[in-house]
Length: 96
Image 1 (spheres, rainbow, N blue to C red):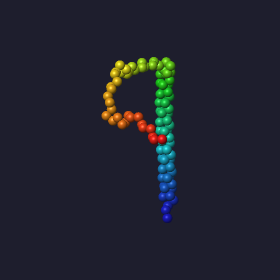
Image 2: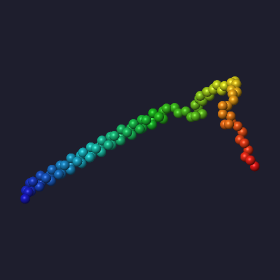
Image 3: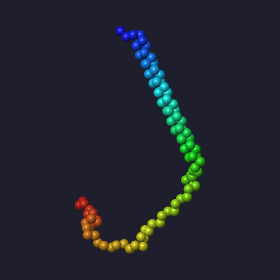
């Protein structure tokens, strides 16, 4: 049978482990809250920086000049007979 001293030692070791675990969990919680605080601070800074930037509405923006394309309207049509006249022939009427 185990002595009461050994049992007490086991209990106190378990208590110490429990305290250690609680402290470690508390530290994680503190680290998490620090991280959340830093993220929130960065978010607030980003929002205030964004708010300070001038925002243009579409009616205030300059419209870029429209591109001018060379259409080739002066070109002359190429008159050349097709090598496949059956492709362009008028369809025959079906016999009635």
